[in-house]
Image (cartoon, rainbow, N blue to C red):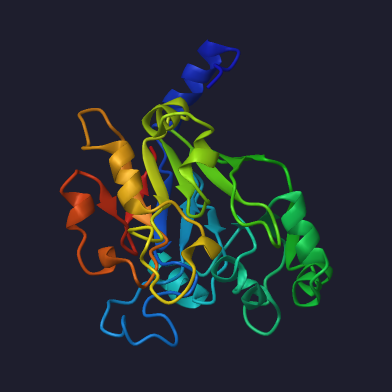
Length: 287
């Protein structure tokens, strides 16, 4: 990444940030349908996982939610808060936005929450009656800038290729003393990396903790439907690209697990290489 101007000023700012806490709490680790998934008996015995979501707490105690799932109440309980200052959305697929209505007058009756999303995502919200009413009632105050400065932390949106029937897709870089990448969905590493090496890409972004798409373990996991209709890079491919964790490597954590993913039962294919599978309630300190 390009260095900022005013190096001395930046060093001074970083030293000040060491005295404050910036954390990210993992609030959901499942694909949009959750685990167990409705209508499936193959996963009924699995431990419950909520649709993917994270909560960012800035250096002044502000709470910033990423994704709005229908399990919002349970996820705020994990986060131990009832207060949300802003909401960031990655894209428009079901599990990431189906909780938007919970902010309205029928439930939270929230007011003035900053809504951060892409211009295309905002256009969809404005043209969807059940969501546009949240804007007209003042529940959300929309923002579309790709770079957001919060107390002690910067959030940067990065567009990545993913099924765009309804909106585009953006991952987020959350940057304090440490940097966390939130990449719950994308189509293929080839498109996302644009021919770059995965390790080199993470190093280029200066990522210390990467929460990445682990939807399917293998490319033939779905037995009764066409997996090409729901493209995601399989975990086994990502592990081949990463290899074993080395000294100095950051953390790579697989999230957005489909109910068919064997990692819901056995994490060892990931952990034996030194990487991780996400768990609800895990807290990442970025200071």
